[in-house]
Image 1 (cartoon, rainbow, N blue to C red):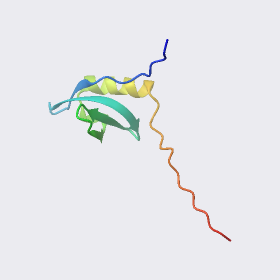
Image 2: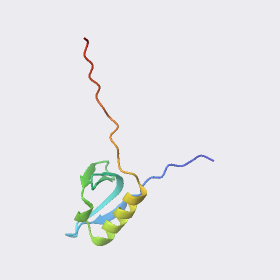
Image 3: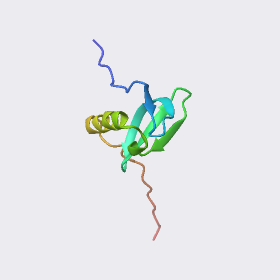
Length: 80
């Protein structure tokens, strides 16, 4: 059998003001999460913008998924 990668599923999130959005959790870093809508647009938000239930869901997801690490680096070399 082939190993399957674990992907977050799209979910309806509701902001504290009642605005709803369907998106999937993609990554988290620095206390913020990146969400991806069905149209492919991604954006970074603080979990506390959502209602209590969604905050609990996000906290559990963050606990089970390591934070995003930026592995990009620059090397500068000078000839001497």
